[in-house]
Image 1 (tube, rainbow, N blue to C red):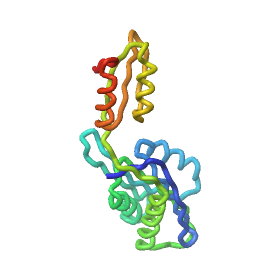
Image 2 (image 1 turned 60 degrees about the vertical axis):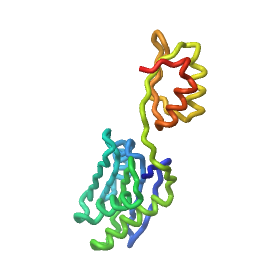
Image 3 (image 1 turned 120 degrees about the horizontal axis):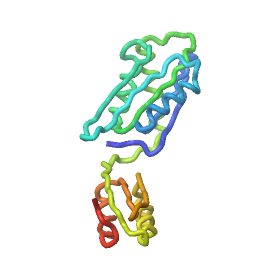
Image 4 (image 1 turned 90 degrees about the horizontal axis):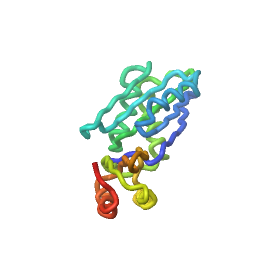
Length: 190
């Protein structure tokens, strides 16, 4: 399975209709859809599709035709994501109607081509399951811990200071195991 390293977009024009495909991480889906609707008030359709892994590592999929004929836009967009074996990814295709009807086959091709072109612009990476790690440490060790977090490319979700420095981080399991081994004398897991 693969996922996005960066967002991408591509504009396809078919018989004066514009199809603007935005390929984004799933976590940004709702905010990006709201933003695109504000940026494109005259667009006719906002077709969406997404695939993500839930907390049980099951793939959840959904698509919406947003007023286009049933099965001509959302499903073909989702099929492109499925074909590329992508997870934690969403696509939003903004359509401006150009005055010429494309027919069901033309719509399927246009939406599929727009999503494929956007996929061609994206940088994909292998999906690796992330695990959470919570720990505490003395204030005197914060500098060393921060250095190791940066060096290992671990994402810090929370860092707060109480009686001790408390961290909540996430990274692939193998990265966290190496991190714990290097810092086992200074961190206390909980």
